Length: 241
Image (cartoon, rainbow, N blue to C red):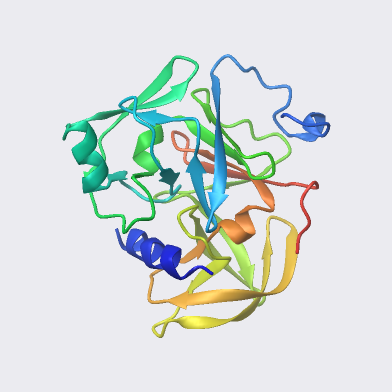
């Protein structure tokens, strides 16, 4: 089910709105600095549906941990090679970003990395399919907050041992754990006060563990790139398993 997406994700590793709105931890936050962008989930990757790049529609997915954004050569050819591109978020708000040229293997036209968001924060509501881009940064009330130095990172409990794990929406899996021999297995996992029990996990020859969308989707996820903070709020609207 994840074969094609996992190939792309491995390469990248190397490189309120409902009746429950009042429950959300930031429901009283000011909205003047916010822009909401809709997304859909395809093959467990997140694709923005209301955005354009240089006023062209396309398939734009994002990795919260990728250091650099990337644009597929075929899509770049349709709009002309540029030093910087405009990502239109709607509501008269746009971001200038500088993607590298990279064959995305048919997964999408543009990969948006951490560099696209600058020092702003993004909040991901998996249940309603919205990314909130907020120039004012994180609103940590009600969340478990983690600080990080490089990639967005949280502490996760795996079989009783706490380890750092990178938060990466470019990973369509549950969790990928470091191991010299790639493969699959099971592990008992807990994150931000939520016990997931024994779940299916992946193994890869990587330096640090990564948490993917199959686990992240149980939370409201906020990443403040300016302050280097990750906030997780266990979403009671979504079942743990």
